[in-house]
Image (cartoon, rainbow, N blue to C red; front, top):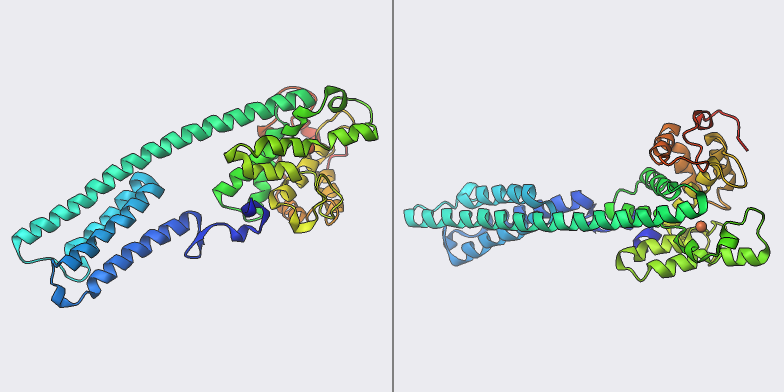
Length: 351
Ligand SMILES: [Fe+2]
């Protein structure tokens, strides 16, 4: 969870790069290092010495890494480079003896065989992984939709705020796919703990008593304890736990303040309130986009992280509207996004 709690710049890096760029850099550096090593080998090692042959076998490393990271295309690219280098382009190490030439050709053939087999293996693994991931995501969406149906009569609130969270995270320069997945899952399941709140409290139309509020405030901890037992939901569970914390420390359940609140939860808090204001609820109508943004601005530094609010304001209204429309597929009174008038930034409040 530390990756979500901390600054996005601290996410996993290789050679100072992150994500795909880091992997490409790692493979390129390995290929270049082996090639330079071969070209720098003293002449007394000849064109087919044991040392030179051993170093050439190091080309398998970038080939296998490329196959595992980029499947067939990565393996092919790394194998082409290894083949070109091994055939003597670097260091002029092409042997004069025909039998040694045949051995060298055989060696490059093995590069292609290993490249093809490893690419095939990793392609299968990636396909299987994506199938499992899709099945997991669909299960989570179904769970979130069922919870939304219970509380809001429509099943799209959680998907909408999850998508808002991703858009806002992108504006805050979070690009790492695994981090974005954590944020999306945390947003989608933020209120999963409400499954433990009785209908008499959750669905009460009037104001809650202090005792009922005490019960309602348990939902972040209930949700967190449900999710943290599942390995791929352990990091999103931190967002679930902290989604009602406030930047000034006046939130619940822990009373965390400032950067002690996970970044994902700080981002989510803003979009959750924005969504609550700009959709029809039991206790109010739908505010306009401008009013939603204005409420966030008023809460910057107290309820919300000012950096998050600043990023929110940089996002064009059209982006929020597009996400809202995408997630307003279910009929019902909960959402106002399909009511064009309420989407106008200059429209008066429906409250
Ligand atoms: Fe909540």
